[in-house]
Image (cartoon, rainbow, N blue to C red):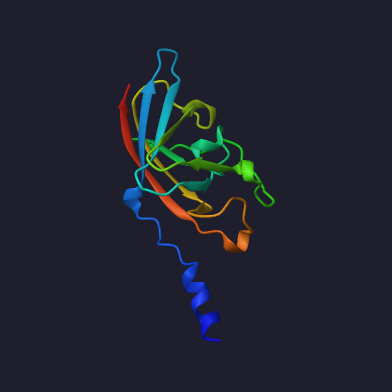
Length: 158
């Protein structure tokens, strides 16, 4: 009975510290009116990470509102796709080795009706629906451990 009590403790994993996972966000207006967004995600820790990329820029397309866009006149409405999903597969996870970084680029205009000029405020934040520090993905939804990701703000005066 005593050994059974120790077993869960042997499987305990120290939670990820926010300093271990950092994100940089950059927005660049193009002459044709498009706004290019660049995201850089860095694993500053000593452990490999597996992140469920759903609803993040690392999914490769706009399948969730991971950027809030606004002008002085108000918030712009997200017009990207929203997905209903089943259980994740291993390919739905992003592998980020310790000490490494990954980048993603998307065009803001693919998900928002961006005015051709004026001030544009952008906030990049999303929720990793699952973050694994050990084991191989995927894992059942009931075992998912999420993490909020703040990637910063950018103001463009175009």
